[in-house]
Length: 114
Image (cartoon, rainbow, N blue to C red):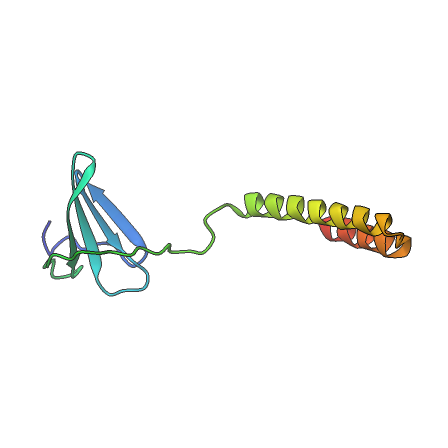
């Protein structure tokens, strides 16, 4: 790789053969991960423009976005959890004889899910 082919920008990565280059959103530098078979051979920090690469020992990589699942999947999980919690509390309140509270909780839970 040379200085004429910089990484495209922050929050991106590029794979070329056994070399992975990662450009985190939170740093000015990029990282080059060189592989040998299934193991990391070397890890270096590079300047995306100048392509100089001193060796480093540790590399924490944080996701570009906080949302690692699709909005639809997240919403389905949220609605299942809300329904389960609402029905659990509804049964608990009915068992205690708090029928008005149980009915109100059930109505609010179902309204929120709709």
